[in-house]
Length: 181
Image (cartoon, rainbow, N blue to C red; front, side, top):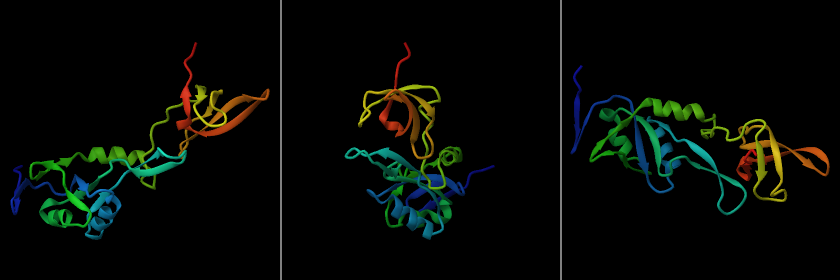
């Protein structure tokens, strides 16, 4: 099978119909660029992640790859629609030639993303793990994981408080593993 070569102005690339590409967006314009591309009939994927805020104890949802999103593009038909879309800086590639990425990468990320597009990290804690609370009113106390991280990034910890076993639900980012002795 021979590869077709397409030339769009000064950009020359192998024709690879409907391959996934990385789109470099303008600063903090990932959602806007995604919206503009979808309006032009371009399939996109913008994965998100929940991270702790550096200012508060709250969590913030932000793009997994700030400044980038994925687009499934037929370069011969949609190249200019993509590169001229508001919010888009360029297609990532080598020199002027956009480089496609394996569809398996997108499948891998989508498999870990919920319906909301948020990529869930693999659970760090397992049932029975001993943990220490890092901060907050219970800081320094040790407990045992009763239920691993759910979709909200929280775990249920079984603790001994005031001579009673108590269940406490905490964000997993507030916990550290306790080394077994």
